[in-house]
Structures are given as structure tokens and as C-alpha cells.
Length: 119
Image (cartoon, rainbow, N blue to C red):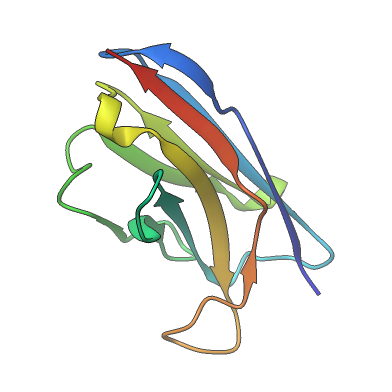
């Protein structure tokens, strides 16, 4: 079992920045791909970014490319999401996830942290 806990959400003005953290416990996630997803009010959950275990490959949704940066610290079992140039449409609950048993499905999810961007 893996438990994921996100922190760092909050209220920020448009153009501002936030850094989200996701700490894994229960087992190491060093060898696995981790990702961030978000779900805005009245919207479906959508992919934001993912990073491979060696941190040598990151993929982003077009909507956040150039503004968000995903990174990880395997020694801390933690993945980060640096969000710059925030827009009101970035308002959502942000959740992290880890892919362990499948190459296509994320097996464990955190509860999420709320990010609200005011205009």
C-alpha cells in the first residue's frame, strides 16, 4: 500500500505562483512514474504532468506547458509541482498519483489539495 499526501495549495492571485508537494509513505516510489492531475469545478479530472522515476523525462499537458514544472526528490519520496503564471482556469483540486502495477493505470491517489486563483 502507498499513501500519498499533497500539501501547498491555497489562494493566489492571477500571475502568482505556488509549489505543491506530494509525499509518499508505506513504500518507496523511487522506481515508479508519478503524476499530477487536477479537477476543476464542474469538470472532469485531467492530466497535468508526469515524471519518470529517474526524473529524466517529464510530460506536460498543453495547458500548463511552460508555466508548470514537475520534479521529484527520490531521497524524500516526494514529487513537486511548481506552478508559475497561474490563471483563474487553473483553479482545481490537484492530486498526485503513482503508477506501480501497470504502465497505463495509476494505482494510488492522494486526497488532493485545493488551488484557487483569483482574477
